Length: 410
Image (cartoon, rainbow, N blue to C red; front, side, top):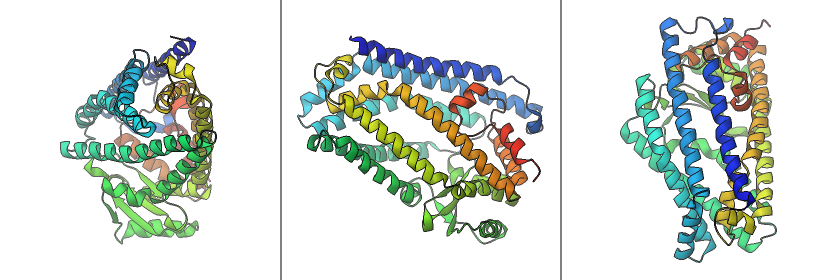
């Protein structure tokens, strides 16, 4: 138990403590009066139902945080990493296979520990409030598909990184970062065509008033759209959303079928006007640049400790290894990750305000505002989050802030 051991333990408890404090603050804020701009979203009965939903999600959030902290401490502070490392070293001498086996065990154990919470959330909480439409079969197949895709993509990335480290210890971090950046760029470009069909069916939006309204607005703001698809999100949940996918000539609009069911044509166009605003402000490119810079920093920092004996000894092992040092590094990195996430959320809220302003400036402010209110009410959203929670965790301004800005006269 060197000094680094206690530093890591402190970091883990600090992370848990911050989550707990924010949770408590949000509980207190949930009892605050509803802002004037949002009055009427819920009637008395629905607001009581929203408060009940909030309490259930609060309890789930605490349970999830507690379990994740307990699993982390079990692996690090109570010899879990050392035990798994001893096993993989005894199984194979290949550094690549050791890393794959080590992280497969960590991943599977962590997932198994949180699986009961996921099941409870889907089939008890979401079911209780009428949001869940997922069958047991869909839940199981989704679980297996995600497990397979994570194993394929994350396993390939890990194996490549270990292999590159063996070839060029000095520059592996730069080469590995480049490979991962290219892969992420590829996935952003083709995700909607390659991955989404594994989980959902996407069908072209049929001709009619909605398609015409979307195409007319897109033409008005000089935003070429090649494809408009409807995704069968109702097979899992009644929550609604919409998004754009792809770059350049690959741009496509994707609407949740639940969105079409819940909103009017003008409201849907208002929501999409916001998304077009993101493209007009080149937010996708900006976000990619930030992600690339952040991941480059992470790879470089890891390269500084990749062969550090002190890192391995903190986890109870005598010799450093790629997979073991990576596991401990991921814990040491938590404070920096918090800072980067905080900065990212501040920047994201700025982007969201700008995208809202784009919709408002093109006459869609009230339509988007109306759509946001309906979606929030249907999803039983918390209308009074604590300012500290918003500052730390929210990637969007609060609903009250967005509605106030959107409904300003032109």
